[in-house]
Image (cartoon, one colour):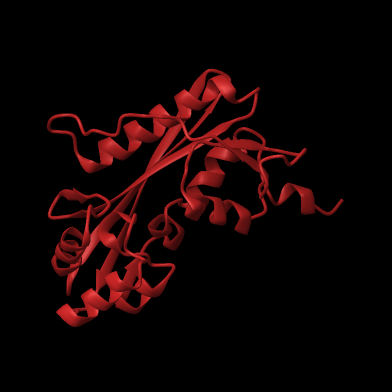
Length: 201
């Protein structure tokens, strides 16, 4: 969806191409703004609290450029053993993450926030993902594909990484990076609903 769309319905405060693809999927028109927010966890902060705080901070930061539009922001983490796995720094880091996730379940948690009219509404969404056991050769081949680079937890369920996913409980779009059901619930409160343009009189 081009940023110059004359019928823009919201501002997306995210650099993520996956979040843009999800908004495109449901036909929302948006502009992209990527606010600069410090994503350092606070001492003792849980992954759930972290993603919600960051989503709210990104939504708040985008309000100055919103021109009256609602601002949508999100933050997603892959959590195993209570620890949030970030994006891999290099091959060794990615392979370590994939080995840690191999043959077990983990939680994908997203914070979503919508800022409008000086107020911010937010939610936290969790999905449980189980990956099958993987071999070292498979993990190395997956890294060589280029897909894990820049992905939290070093895998992408919407891409080649799907071959490792044995089971998913909860929202698929949450694992991709933006839980659409919960996001639309927040956006409808601001009058943004992709179904409204298809309403039958």
